[in-house]
Picture 1 (tube, one colour):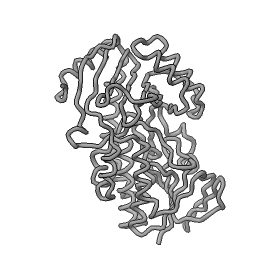
Picture 2 (cartoon, rainbow, N blue to C red):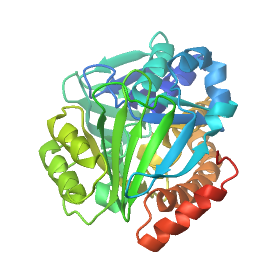
Picture 3 (tube, rainbow, N blue to C red):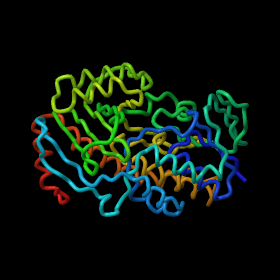
Length: 363
């Protein structure tokens, strides 16, 4: 029996823990947070992820926590409706779920199959042909046959194994800040998108409480993704001259404690594994915060578990070959999505609006 450590109990980590344990591996998951904590930002479960969650038996639970969103309404600078576009989720082609609920459902499926260590993280890794010696921030050192980094864009496993983040993480020049709306919205089935050149504000109905997203183009130097006070200042400066409901939303952001902020980034690595250590999810191949991250994380975790079960010695290579074929088209789609959501110029915005009106799902 292979003894595997997974760093990160998010979407990729919990999915991987479930499938590795089901395939006979002894699995431990270490998670920095004190419990299952994640943003309420809506994410999609679609494409290659759907058969995975179906096989896990969690689709009914995901449908229970899914959002009620059916349409996206595009608004101009003056707040008037430009176009309304239906969503694929309405046709059953995907599930839109608050990320916190997706993580909880996947964790609940995996927690009976694996050991979970919360409020801790990996501090050091030393590997040889016999395995990996791991030191933790809090727990006693342990030895594992394999270590998998499922710890996101700012992966500690990637940094310890491959080198500093700046060598592999490429910002796109777009930033995202999100927070809760502070209560239910008055449009429970519609996402509202308000654009000015280079800036987007989205109000999402989510499920019980709406959410707000600020997505904008900027040049910001040396942003610490943990410095919430500076994040709020950056967003306020970027949107200070925008009308519509933005002034009130900025007030909400300034008073909020549940703010998420990060650069939209792409992770590029020549290989996703080194020796007995590998990466999965955003740690390996973040395509962007506007792309297929959650679905790719689920599909990639299942592919990795299946490859390791079939041939542990060749599993990393098989996983990478199969999953990279999914990542590249998703990366191109994410680039297109970013251009559509946050056009740089007035001309680009006008072109996007014309395309939205002509979109096959426009209503």
